[in-house]
Length: 338
Image (cartoon, rainbow, N blue to C red):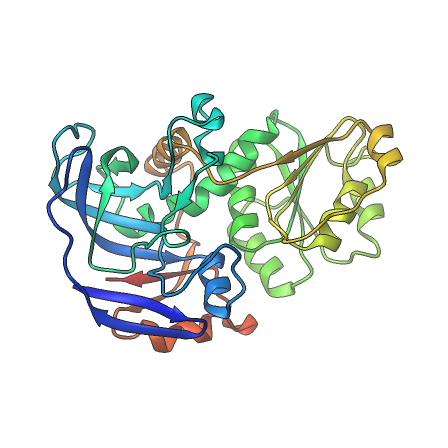
């Protein structure tokens, strides 16, 4: 079958590999139709992804069609089109026992810790498949990305009418904007890149844009009638931005770190206590997030039209991929069509 392998940093290879065998107990065999390209894939290509080994088949944002079902699978059927929840969990650690499977102690993510979906077919646990009767496989491949924002917003427990500030308008920040809006927040966006700001304001419900870090605090005060936002999401993965984000949170408010940085984040402890700030981390998403997102997409409450900006086929992928890393490429979400 057709398979794309990242042999080492900056070296993909298209090769033929063996088809998977029949599904065993609890498994399904799927045909991979669409694979979304994630920031994790970009980091792996550059050789900057932690806890990563080569060679690796990338791909964890998957839209698939079920071709065969193993014994004990009842939630999906042959021919169903599905989104894939790519987090393989142990089911027995303290996080799993509490229903927080997104932060399983032994979690492995497809395409990161184990081989993923950049291949024609793959075997998967049936419980990780989430079907839709109306969404196409390109839309279903977006569900995992949207899940990051949906879970972050869920962690923040937004109440309708709150003013929320999102910092960073990459794909993760955009997903936060989308679900904060669904939750009833009035959303402001801090983004220094004018192209990203323009895209976000034209495609999503952004009430106010902020693009100057030297004046943003005064502008936030004006936007909130001197209150500051009650919830702030930092989706940059930049330690300086994450440290500064503490300054933007209202007294008694919440700060959610959606982006991840490989290092330390420092902040003023007295100011943190004075404001009684709630600091939240957020990781991945859960099965219930996938089901909720699919329902919102099916109803039209979440619009997927702005997301996919670039596509490539199996034959053109290797040549296309390096160009997607360029800042002027304008990539929001690139999609591999298998």
